[in-house]
Structure formats: structure tokens, C-alpha cells
Length: 196
Image (cartoon, rainbow, N blue to C red; front, side):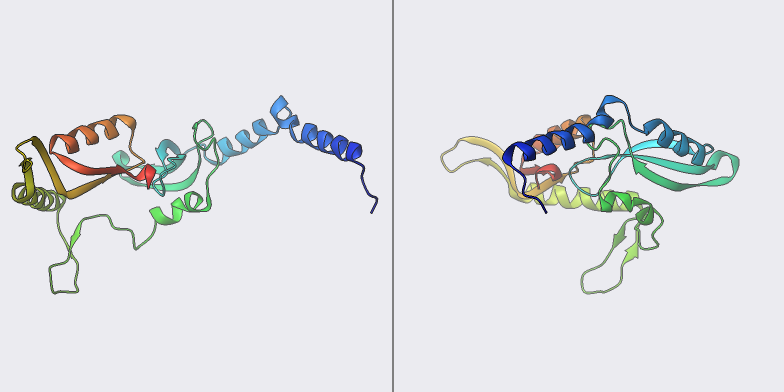
């Protein structure tokens, strides 16, 4: 192999960069790819959603066949990255690309479960029972550990024995409301999955 001079290396690098940037100038096959996608999923219902795996918050397009109103059970048949989403612009990591397998997994939990102390069996409970149980435990802990004043008499109104971790896949509005609710209870240990 010939040795390149510095000048030749810079010329080759510039030519490679220019050649790889041709797609940005409008010479890509995006129209052909879009036509294939529309044909393949022409009868499916498209829904935009957010990937739930990590704190990045990539946008996904979910396609479902069937209509519950017409006695045909809806089923998700395809998931892909959302090309209009500002975070991932249509790309997905391997975990996000496997979302379809997670949706149809037999091991996926769809109802709350409870395991009593000292047992090894999980029992399904209703959503209303799960929310009541969580609310009772939070209230009991807050009543027992809420700090109104410091030893010097300064009012602090804080609750330090319980923390809250918010989901990164939630919208800004949901995050704002979650923050207001958690802080109004006096909870100090509050973080978001996006920082974890």
C-alpha cells in the first residue's frame, strides 16, 4: 500500500465527507422507504408513543390490526422508531427495537400482584386495592415521620423517610404535576429517571 502524504490524506478525507453528505442534500431514498412502509401497514392503525425502556424518551410508532369496537381484538403487529420525533429521529436501540416482543410476552404483568410476608406466592389484586394499599402505607409513614419544626424551632415541614422516582417517559405536564404533588406532601427525596 502506498503511503499518503498529509495533503493526499486531507483530500481523501474531504472527498469522503462530501460523498457521505450527499444524502443530506436530498439525494436519499427516503421516498422509496416511506412507500414500502405505507404499503406494508396500509390497514393498520398508527399510534405514537414513547419507549419505556430508559430515560432517553425515544418516540415510537405502533401499528395495530383489529378494532375492539367491531368485535375483533386489537393486536400490535409492528413497532418502529418515529422519524418525526426530535430525540431519536426514527432510530431505535436494540432494546427499543424489541418492544414488540415485550408487548406480546407471556411474562408481562398486566395486573398488580401482592406477596404477603413469609410466603413465596404472588396473588393478583385489583388496581383499586393496589392504590388503596399504597395510599394507606404512604399516609401511615408520613403521619409517623413528618417533621414540622427543627430542634431550634424553625418550621421546615418535611418528610424524609420516603422518596419518589418519577418516570422519564411521562410528558412535561405529568412531570410538573408529579413534582407539585410530591413537594406538597413535604417529600424531599424526589428524582426523575432521566437523571438516574
